[in-house]
Amino acid sequence: MKKILIIFAIIGLSLTGCVEFLDKTDPTATSFVEFFNDEEDLRRVVYSSYLDVFTHPSSHQTLFYMEEGKSDNAYSRVDGHHHQRIANGNINSTTSAFLFYYELQMKHLGRLNTFVDNADIPYVEDEAVRTKYKAILEALRVWHYFKLTFRWGDVPFHLQPADLVDALQPTTPKEEILDQLFPLADDIASRLPEDEYTSDKYMFNKYSFKALTMRYALYNGRYELAAQLAKEIMDSEKYELYSNYEELFQYEGASTNNEFIMHFDMQSHNNSATNSFRDLGPHYRTGNGQSYVVPLKSLVDSYWTLQGRPISNCPLHTEEEYLLDPNLNRDPRYESSIMGHGDTFYGEPIDIYNTNNPMFFENQRASKSGFWFKKFVSEADAFRSGGNFDFGLLRYAEVLLTYAEAKIMLNDIDDLALESINMIRQRAGLDMSIADVTGAEYSDFSQEDWINLIRNERRIEFAGEGLRYEDIIRWEIAEEVLNQPALGHTRMENGEMVSLKIEDRSFQPHNYRWPFHENSLRVEPGLTQNPGY
Image (cartoon, rainbow, N blue to C red):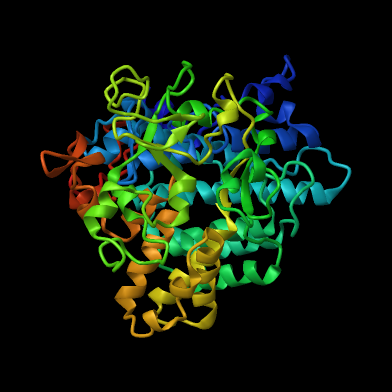
C-alpha cells in the first residue's frame, strides 16, 4: 500500500484535471498515449495544466488575490481557505494547508513530466506548434519548482516521469535545483514565440516566461539575473504602463491594457464566471459580497503621502491626523485600491459601526477590519452572480520595480533604476515636483533608505495582488510584521485612538520554510522535515 501511495504522490499519473480535458478521452482507451493523438489533445493538456493550479476562478486556496490573506496586508476570514492560519501562525506539520499545497504541486509536476515526455506523440501539421506547446509545458514545470523551492527549500527534483526508485530518493538541495532551473528557463524562453498569441494569450510566450523567471531570480537573491531579465523585457518595448492605475483593475482597463504580461483572462478558464466581487466585496444589499479577504490597518497605514513621504515624516499633517483619516493627502493608489468607513459604495456611505447596516463590522460576511479591497471589485457586479474580469498575474510595473530593487540591492543605482521608480509614481498621480526620486530630497539617501522606499513602493503598487507574502518572506521581515495583532479601522474614543482588533498573530524563525505534512513524510521516505517542526 505504501508503494502505491508513493507512486501517486510523486509520479502523479492520475489525470484528475479539468473536465474538458477528460471529455476527449477515447472510451476504449486504457493508457495515456491512447488518447494523446492530435494537436487539440496537446493544447488541452496545456490548458488543463494552467486551469487546475493557476487560473481556476473558484479555487480560494490558489486564487492570486486571496494570497494576500497570508500576509500582513490582509485578513482571510475562512480558515478552510488556508491563508488565515498561515498568517496567524497557528500551524504545525499536521496543518492541512501544507498537505494541500504540496500534493497539488507534486501531482501536477508528475503530470507535466508525463506530458513533456510524450509531447512528440500527437500528430501536428506544423512542428512549430509542437515546439510551442512542449516549451509551455516545460515552462509550467519550472514554475511549479520555483514555487516549491521557495516554500519548502529542498524538495524531490525530477525532470522525467519518476519510477518507484526515484520516488524513494532524498530531496535535492534548493540551490542545486535553482542552478539547473535558471539556465533551463533561458533555454525554454528561446523556444517560445516572442509575441503574445491572438488567442490563448494566457499561455507563456518568450517575454512572459522571462518575466516569471525574473520574479523568481529576485525572490532568490539573484539580483544580476533579475536586473538583466527586467532590462531585456524593457528593451523589447512590447509592454507599457497603462495610463490610469484605478481603471487597470476595473472593466474599463482590465482587458484593453498593454501592461499585463501574464494573463488570467476569461479564455484561461473557458469563460466561466469570475467572482472577485463576491470574494472581496462587501455584503451590501445582496447576498453576493462575502468579504473573504479584507485589508488591514497595517496596509492602510503603509500608503505614503501625495508627495511620496511616509506619513510619519510629513510636515503637512501630524501622523495622528493621517492615522485617523486614510484619505488625507494620501498616495492616490490608496483610493484606487481600498475603501472603508466613511467612503461611498454604490452611492451610499459605508458605516461599519451602524448595527442596521449590512456592512456593520461584526456581521459574519462584513469586513472585520472595516476596509475592503476596491481592486477587482466593480459596482457593475453588485447585483449579479458573477463577473467576467480579466486579471494580470504579472504586470509591467513589476518589471520596472524589479529592475530598481535589483540595482538597489547591488548598490548600483543607475539612472534607469530611478527612472523606473519615477514612472510608477507618476502614473499613480503623485506630486512629482516633490516625489521625483532624482530630486534634492533624495540626494543623500543611503542604500538602506532606498531599500525602505522600494519595499514600500512594491507594497502599495501591488496591494491586493498576492505578492506581499513572498516579499516579507524573502526580505526576512515576517518575524517583525507577522508578530503584530491584525488590526482594522482606527477612531478616537474618549480621547484615545482605538483600532478594531481581529486576531493575534505569531511568526517563528523556522516559519520561513513550510513544514512537510506528516502524511507526506510517511509516504515519501526521501523527505526530511524542515527544522523547527
